[in-house]
Image 1 (cartoon, helix red, strand yellow):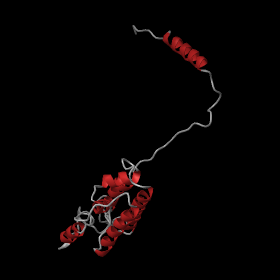
Image 2 (cartoon, helix red, strand yellow):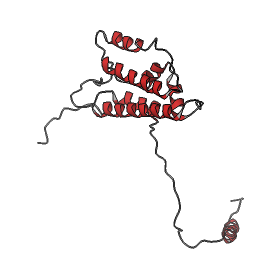
Image 3 (tube, rainbow, N blue to C red):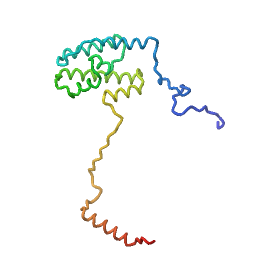
Image 4 (cartoon, one colour):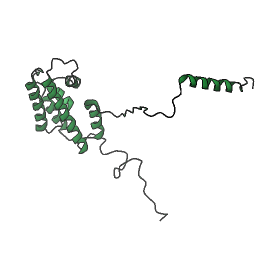
Length: 189
């Protein structure tokens, strides 16, 4: 049927979304959500500092953090884990990566790295199962887990494209070509 009219959809919009708004573009807060988020973080506000030289204390703090996330039905995060230790996320990253933290024993560092791996797995699970906005997930994984949108290409010539000509012979050849070509050149033309 050549005369059939097909309703046109907007460019790049998922079927059924209508209009310009994507269904996942706005925050989906319910009444009481802000209180829930604040109360969750306030549970860690007065926690005493952890002696990072004691691996058992480090492991206990990480366990406590993940337990309150489960109790409060909250997604754990790098920033949340840093809050549990009373530091910012950059300090937590430094501890895990041995930057300015020689005083932290290997066992404590290993426990922190394992907690990071756990958070990484959680984030992947959330993203693969539609439990977090993909844009937010990608942002968080790039900032906290070392992910990147780049591709490095290394070109290594491992096969010659013919006989190798000595540099002197190439220089002589090109000088002859330039001199020969310049004899045809008349600046007055």
